[in-house]
Image (cartoon, rainbow, N blue to C red):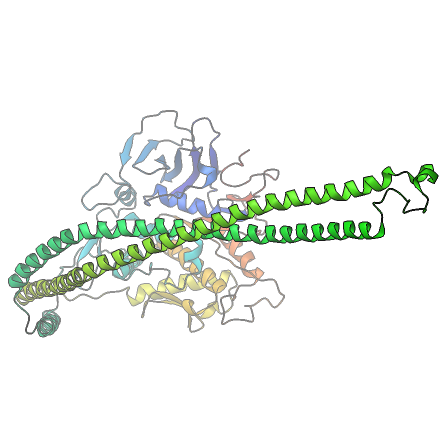
Length: 612
């Protein structure tokens, strides 16, 4: 099998297409340009449940994958929103309402041959293979998903500490190891007869019954002295009726309490209004009393002036008080009218001030009247307030016994609910115990699990050859072991115990070795691999591993990256490599470098063209 192209199409948009070279395609460039999306899209065409939508994919409707199945050129197509997979004969880059030659279900189902999984497995002569699922030799049908995860390696899985063979899901561990055994040895588990170990079954059965008996005994001990379940149910019914009756009796009094609270609130608001009114009146009275005092002071001052003028003769018209001349001898500047005007002026000012003081006295009287009214009103309101408080207290006192009774009933209902739930749990435990006691073990064949020693040795040799070609330090001491979990061992240390960079390159080595091992021996394999960020390098001059070998920053030297790409450029496998770093120049036929710039003005932006 060879990958030809990955193409997204949609109405009114130019197809977004990526060509795969026959031997090696390296896609590199900026983050967030769709490199990892390529792996996901390929997996999606092979039956993955969904493909994440990214902003750039919005105008597109379908994804196409061109594949070469031993000279049979086909195109797989699937709607980006999900659904079935259409198969077209030929290499198509647009659909134009073409009718598919066949449609396949994306989900693998045992016995259903109309699935993409069966379609691809049939081309690998694995369509009816079975995998051992668990220790009882229960088998499941091989799915192409079991194989695709060994050839499509995303970035997180690349450096994960989990075994390259396993997903980390405990229930899938046995079938995943059986998949590796099938690829390395070419034999499935269809000959197994499922069953159980009778001794182990009886031990587990006794243990289960013992646990159930203890659980039942503990549950019954908690119900010691408690009525039986049906009696509890009857009591619960009576309690519920009492709660309903008590609630109805309280409803009218609760309405009275709400009304009393509203009345008290209104009275409090009226009281606050009268308090503000009284405060305002007192403030006005204080200010006007100051003004009255000022008027009194002015009158006293004018009266003093008038008295002083009379005593000094200012207001006599016979002799001038200014120059001492008699009236007939007075000069023009000392006319008699001047003294008269002064006296008139004082009298007028006294009259005006007196009038103002009289008006002010009336106003003060009005203010005092208003203040008295406000005080009288406050007294009346406070009487009403006290009465409303007494009424509210009376209602609360009448409600309290009923509330206490209702609380008691609610507590009783909670207690009865708990007892009934415990009785129900006991019934379920007793039924389960009865069922377990009647179980019988299934007979099972004794089988040898795992990959044989010869296949492991030969696979380790292929892995050693590849890592040595990549100039990975210590590759002369590398092997693949399945004990206790399938993993690569380098210089006596498991891949899972190494740094992030070494874990990545060893995972890439495993995936490459698996493909070449199968192709060299004529064993089933898709014939291609997709590796996302397999070589994390650091920049120094020692040509070995990073000095910090115990952390997640244990990367490989640039020389490994150079040898890595040189090797893949001549491999029998078709390789697709996704990288962030710039790879070395590869001037080899059948190889191609594709740069995703992430910028509109710099060549190809990403898998999808840049939007305006």
